[in-house]
Each structure stands twice: as structure tokens, then as C-alpha cells.
Image (cartoon, rainbow, N blue to C red; front, side, top):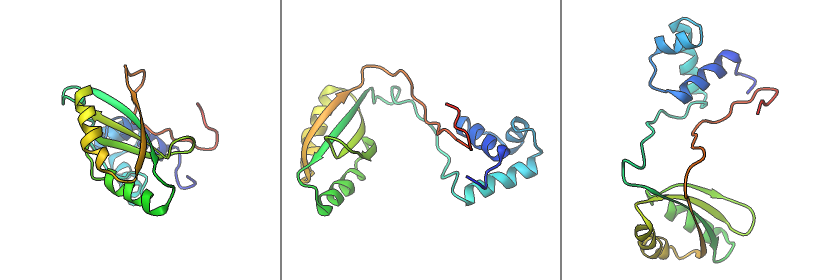
Length: 160
């Protein structure tokens, strides 16, 4: 973070909110001329602060109305089982996020499916084929209180 100044951070925050802005529009929002903004944005990309630009899709309009957080316990805590599990889930489109976690479970996945029947089929026919899974614990989302894709950007003093 030492390389980022206040303008870099402002550029990142603005782009997190709308990555489709033109260089001119971005420059207006950060009170700079387009050329330095363009150069800063390219540097932020080159240095890996900006990984990629994506479109956020409406999951409900796409029929993925049922969100499940699924906790997974592996059969055994071995490197082989862990790698087998991670390799398998990375090929499954319905799983959008997966975290290796501490506590009673080994992994937590976020899964988008159409409905409860679709999730039942998913568990039996997709997750059920992953040999390294010992047990599952599913948590169904009733409603969203917050859904932000933005990453907080802290400098010296985190303002929560």
C-alpha cells in the first residue's frame, strides 16, 4: 500500500463502483486531467491492484434465485483430499465462491441454483460425486441485507 496515494485510492474506489467509466469521466470524478488518470489506471492494472473488469449480473433475472452457503468437511485432512476437493469445485459453475475456513468445517462454498429441487439434484449428482467430501451442512439464504462486491481500501487509519 505504500505506493498508493490518495488519488490512486480514489481511482480504485470510483472504478469499484463503475468500471465502465471512460477515462474522461473517471478524470472528472477524481479531479485530474485524463492523461495522468489513464497512466495511473494502467499502473494500477500492471501492479495487480486491478485484476480485471467484469459485469455484475442480476442472478434473479437469470433464474438463480436460490443461494446456499454450504459448509464442507473433508473425509480426511490430507493434502490429497484437499487438492482433490479444490480441483473438483473449481470446475463447477454453480459454486461462485469457496473458502478454506477454520472451525468445525474445512470449506465454505457459495452456490447459486434455481430452487430447492435443483439444489437437491446438485448435492446428489454433483457434490455427491466428489469423493473427498465427508459431510455437508447447508444454509439457505432467506433474503439479502447487503450485497457488496466492493473491497474496503485502508491506508494508515482504517475508517470503518
